[in-house]
Image 1 (spheres, one colour):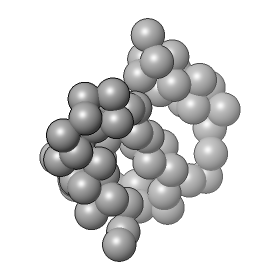
Image 2 (cartoon, rainbow, N blue to C red; image 1 turned 45 degrees about the vertical axis):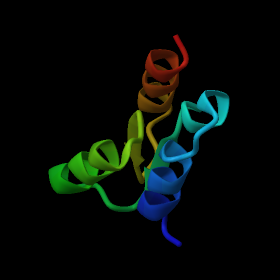
Image 3 (cartoon, helix red, strand yellow; image 1 turned 180 degrees about the vertical axis):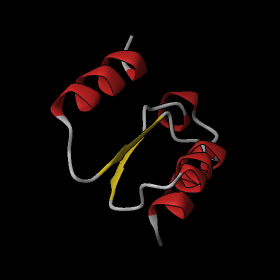
Image 4 (cartoon, rainbow, N blue to C red; image 1 turned 180 degrees about the horizontal axis):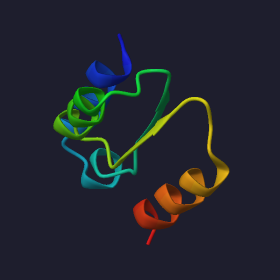
Length: 65
């Protein structure tokens, strides 16, 4: 199961507390279509490698508001 499949499985859970947990992907896939695929799967954030600490902070702050 890849991260997209795992996210879709989590999002389909009946228990709202579980199905609504924040999910952020960290990946080497850095194209716009990769970001879109993450969003379409139900992820709230996409962080591409190489890592940018400022982007990680912004993404996590946005997701965890």
